[in-house]
Length: 213
Image (cartoon, rainbow, N blue to C red; front, side, top):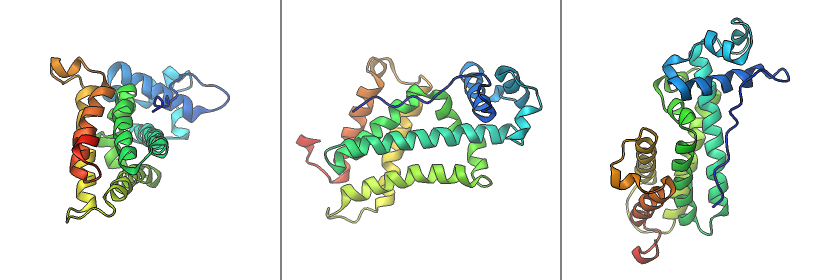
């Protein structure tokens, strides 16, 4: 599978793209000091614009963080779609999507933290585009599980299985991003760990035999 596409993170106000300059500055600040350090005034300073400029696009810091989260959801969704399309089977496609999820989180920790942070979650209720971007990601996973489960006997609900699969890869991604894995596990690359977790999870989907997973 090809490497996860990089999300652009340049700072500075160029070619009149103020919104981009502000979200890039916010990402840089999150990487350096955490999301709690983000203010419209500080982001404006980093982007080299007046402290009033951010209000042309964002009413407050929550809306700015929501924009960062939406960008992350859309980029991750695109990477997962690409990984699934390039896979030779539905089962392998779902596994590749899981690996892509973990690698994306490790390569873009600032996006990942904001995407699943409390402020972005609260903003989904008032920003339809953010809600749609998040739902598209979960919808992609649900569809992937449904394709793997097609024709497989059993009473397990597709949505329940999708939730379990998402919880597994999200849990691994969070452990990696926060540096919480034990030393033995941390000796492996994120891709190797994601490969291990997704292969193990694949056994419970009914889409392959143990010796072929």
